[in-house]
Image 1 (cartoon, one colour):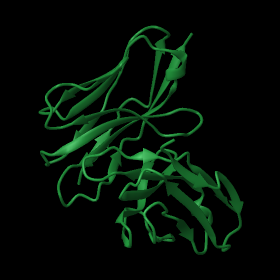
Image 2 (cartoon, rainbow over the protein chains, first blue to last red):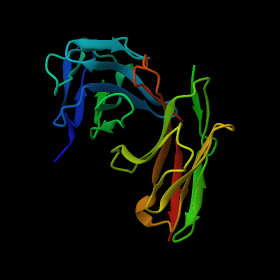
Image 3 (cartoon, chains in turn purple, blue):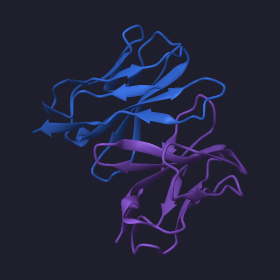
Length: 112
Length: 117
């Protein structure tokens, strides 16, 4: 089944404790992206990747890192999480230009 | 910069009736794509329908159809024969089609659709 998977789905952590949210797609998509969703603000892009080893900042990259060492995986890294990073995070992928983005199930993160 | 506006925070409709959700956008580009996504209580983001700006014909997917008015920069979603399973947040989104595009989706704030049994 073609899909985008994220892990974990739910995470409670404390300020400053490094964490990684994994994202994997099995559709051989070139493009992958991370969004965060906050009430009243809609979805905002954090980082995106056009292909392996090609990443760039979105609208709200502060406090996040990403890597794209292989095509299927695009992990989101929070080196030192803070409470303002409490949010719902979505990973998405797309075959490329002109194509629809397909979303993972979301990761709900609470930083205490 | 492009913007997407959904002016209806919440809409309600009787089961089996028709409802239209509004979306307007602002852009100076001629090549772009528009989407409606549905987010049910599970929080999964599900594509409902997509429209290419260069196509004059309105997109249709079963009970879902759009009214795309390019000159007016309007992109409304019509849901016919509403079902209880249609209850969700609906988001309108825009994406540039330019070759230098970063494929970023620009999102509206969403419309909560309530289905009355």
